[in-house]
Amino acid sequence: MLIVNDKIVDLKATSGEFASYAKDFREKMGAYRAKYGDVIRFLRKNAYKRNASGLTEPVVPWTISFKQTAVGKNGDTETWKYAKGTPRKKDGQYILTQPSHLMMADWNVSLLTDADLAYFVISKTQEFKNGTIYIDDPAAVARKQAAEKRREVELNNVLYGEMSPLADDDTLQAVAASWGVSNTDKKDPNVVRLELEALIRSREKEKNKDPNVKGVKEFLASLGNVKEEIRRRHLIKWGEDHHIIHYNGSSLYYELTATGDRLVYIPVNKLKGRFEYFCDQVLQDRNAKMWDELKHNLITQEYLDTIKKVDDIKWLCKESGIKYVGVKFQDLKQQISEIYAG
Image 1 (cartoon, rainbow, N blue to C red):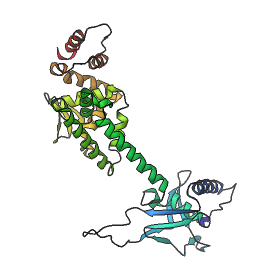
Image 2 (cartoon, helix red, strand yellow):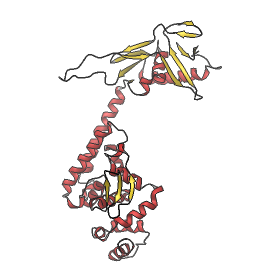
Image 3 (spheres, rainbow, N blue to C red):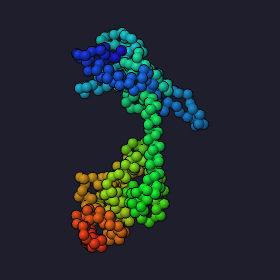
Image 4 (cartoon, helix red, strand yellow):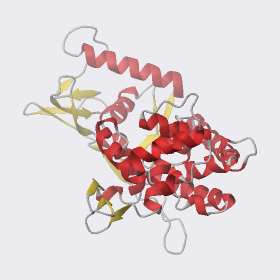
């Protein structure tokens, strides 16, 4: 039995004050029965713990209250209760004879006999909302594991495959630099590949603690982005490697080395991925003026001397508003040099 604000909810209602609740109940339970069958198995996150000796400790019960506060459809605060059978009422309030459930590692709930309980746990408990308990879904686990294996194969192919876009050493250097690998233009390409792989895998581990960190999935997706984004990040990393810009650990700002001018503040929770955060901020459309000013510091004659490919000079022309069709490579370099390094 479901109770909201000390009123028993009529789960069969099609009109009146409980109609919307009843409709939500029927739709959700229908969907869950179609997906999971007659029984939902709830699991508890981190129910099994190991002691210092490496032995699994006995599972400590977790109390799930059958009285929960939730936000209603109109934004109002509602008090929900679940009762097995009909509870007694005192002073206008229903008193639960069983106020909670002690959950061990798992908990099976029948959708045939206790659909109201399943609905209460899924829709109203804080434990389900914050992930302390979740639904056992072997198919979803299998899909996740298969996706991870596919990403692993794809990552190895991208990093080491002969047909990969990163088989080109210049592209490899640009991509690795855009992800924060230092001095890619001074290292053997295979060293760059190994450092890039280590960086991506390290980010993937950090992602377990902070879902906002970019790991394997995001790395693979980034390769499908326009090359301009990678080139811009490569230019920024080149500037950091050559001390044109630097991160000041005292002020928590990226700064121009020559003047000390502050560019972007790095929040404490972004320090591990500070280069990535710095690039994200500088390259936002709203910071177009900052990016344009920064280019005038980054694009030096020394940088232009590293440009050997037509595609690279075309990109710089696009960044600079220079028409390049029919113009010789060296002439384009000279025009860019006059804008930035003159």
